[in-house]
Length: 325
Image 1 (cartoon, helix red, strand yellow):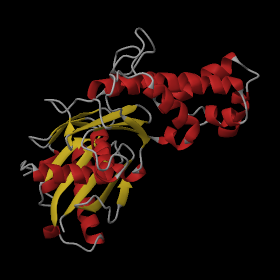
Image 2 (spheres, one colour; image 1 turned 60 degrees about the vertical axis):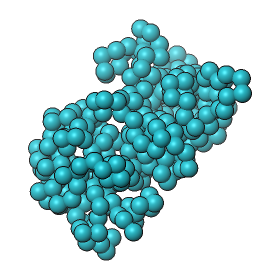
Image 3 (cartoon, one colour; image 1 turned 180 degrees about the vertical axis):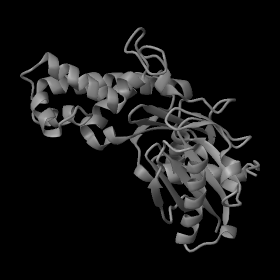
Image 4 (tube, rainbow, N blue to C red; image 1 turned 135 degrees about the vertical axis):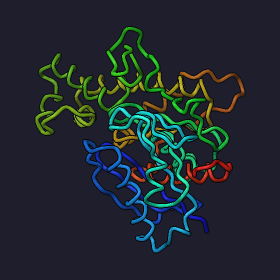
């Protein structure tokens, strides 16, 4: 049996675990990122955590084929660099070189959304398919595309940024510099903003009472008030799922995947989100007569997606004969 280490690098936590060749996660460890430190210190801790994960799994370094890393930002897998990350102090960080000073294994790097897509393709909702798209709804909107079992990320490894495709021309200002990006209408952050705006415009709405229970505007409030029969909340959810469906349909039209997977904390709402999202999404793409249709499903890998996907991305690179040394 072959084994791989997956490292999920986030702005708050670094997680690592050992994964077998079938995508089964054997164990996982986690430490704080402490992102205000020098990049050399953060990367050194990533290497140390990988070594600890191998030992914790009862294995030795010689049992591991490669280390895969999923990180926010833009990687350069050819040279082993993390070129840029908006949430971390990295600028052309020599991640492969520094990690191999701690643990001498091939190292491969990719975007965290791509790794989540790989996890779903290997062991999650898209298992058994060759072409899939995974959209993650969080603070922003992440996207990963799998084509014939391999991550597609463009010539510069910065592709699949569906969150920054314009959905509403001249719309809400986005942090990327454009206005009206999909991210500004479909992320959990966007839903929280829409909920607050609706509550302010409708002071008698239950949205305001539910807000007091949470103490801050978040993506859950509209669904909680909806379940209590609040019409304003129903209108917010209807508006949100309509925007979401438009963006998802664009992704389907671009790639026509066998399955489109949607994940992120918003998806914990279950049927109140899934049913209208699926109905609206499937009414929008261009499917010609007799053409098989994409399936829309919820993600299955949860918090393990980053580790498993990074490890499986490493496996894919090894299988393709790429040099991670």
